[in-house]
Length: 317
Image (cartoon, rainbow, N blue to C red; front, top):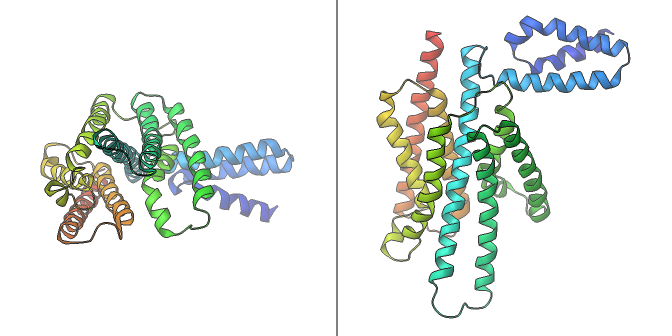
């Protein structure tokens, strides 16, 4: 029984230290009682409930130490901003493909039209994969949002393994991580005890993304001089401007380390995804180098500010 108790105490370590100090012995006692009664069904149910409790307490939204709440806020903001990035990128690519389809003059060479149609279908699927969980969360449908995120993750993992099992490598993982990571974080962080995002500002973000991203694609999808300043993507410039604007106007709001660090992480993921995607396609000239350096400097500044605000809030509490 001593070995069994040691295993259960190890299992209970999925809970944070502050929660184990309050209820750790009680939970271990419950597991030992169920083990002694040989009630396997109840024991497995208790184990799954313990794992879910560990996720909720480590990413708590309230009734927890300040650092735990800050970590939960950070993960939730990364999930939301990551979903917004997926909407921006997919809407931009959809607008660009539609622009080419409707503006191309003359007969389409070979399978050009079929390829564009396939690309359009793929981008619409990716757009739905980010937009559906985001809209459900903003509208307050927490459970449906998590079910949608889990379903999309399962379907995406099956498709990824079927298509990339032969060439699985770091580049493929880095490319798809910004698409899948927000879904994983949505499942983990938006539990029943977590606060939902405020509806009104996020509806503006969702609507603005759906309107602005295709317009940006039409503007910069043209060949010639405008296309020379886009670098990796005009959306990378947009992310850098968003980060810079946040740094300029952040003094007007209360310190929000979760927002600041989440924005830094999402900008870094966006730049990484575009570097992996465009490697060998777009020459890494002065424009791309300036774009990466600018975004990198903003990421560093956001990280420093976020850590400083996080420490300040922890000291005050």
